[in-house]
Image (cartoon, rainbow, N blue to C red; front, side, top):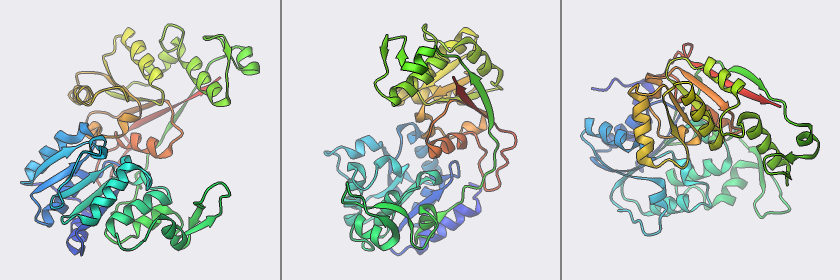
Length: 379
């Protein structure tokens, strides 16, 4: 028998009281959305459910559902978006990581919206709190939970948001909400939403690493490895990060590699925003005798699952990867206390999801034993 947290019991009550059997689990990362989603379906007497989720989580969904006597079929977001993929109007649906379907103009969300108008079975939407940070995503949730409330996105904006006209677009720019401090507060207060605030406290250790680039790079944007000038400031910034971290042989610069090694403590999760840096980190750690696995956007679902299992089972020392580590990687907190953000992202939501992968689960989580090191690449 599962030991349930208070927020899970509250979600089941919200589900039972829902007149249209629709709910959104607006939870922080690592709060048990899988089990809670299935408990809501159980409360609605559903024993056959379709789960839309990242492929690396499919086995976990099936195993959890089995403990509740529920049969689940699983599909990926990519398969759901395919035009030839059809869904039954009478089969209950769980949409995990809903933000992966995109905004109100995206094909994935439009397909879900069309389906939801005719669905004769319950729906559970689930995703972590950092993802809902703008009006577009809030509208997408509300339109599924309460289809008749808003006629469309523009109507939603004019009814709920502070706006500024954009001379280059028919859609105005959102500057805030009329009755709420932000989009997160609007969503948290929405009917049929089970909300768990993201109040876990943790510390980030800032690690500075400096590398001296050639004056010609700074003065003229000369890319020495291709012998040409950077075409834009974006290209120059990208090259600055790559040149500062990776040598010409494809390894991390030795001082950086040594610094990374100093911060490895037990099984370690290493995040890199660029796949080339992740690959260089794996090569460098291998020369130091570390066993590692790599997960990037090019990694197939089957290989990703094998690599995650190897890390969870303690067969490798470090799990290195890119943004794909943010989804479908539950259970890392049980085996890993250290996260190294070697090559940081500018996306605060993504960073919070990554950090959440090693934080302990539960309502009163104590993250004091977790170590989070963020490298600042200076040049």
